[in-house]
Image (tube, rainbow, N blue to C red; front, side, top):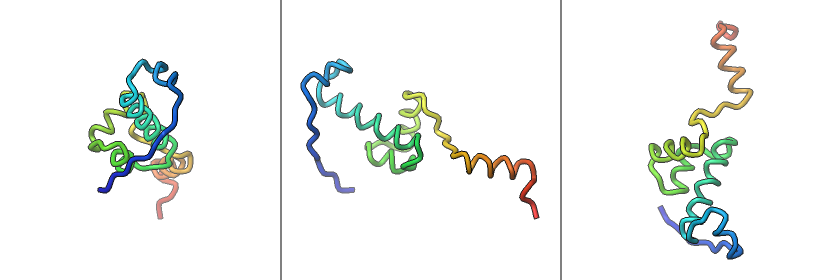
Length: 91
């Protein structure tokens, strides 16, 4: 996997928000972004783990740290699952 660096401009005062040095702050920003993207269904667990350079197992631990469920259902998928569970779609 090829990795590139992209500059991010932040005010110096940003780092005090989490009381972390710049490198740790940027890493935390990256984690927070992929967790949110996963939570909202924009990316898969595998893609999220790849973006932050973690194994899938470590990404699942990261989700736990952010109190985000590893199982994400859309309302349509949940309705479909419930329909199957009730036997409504059986031929």
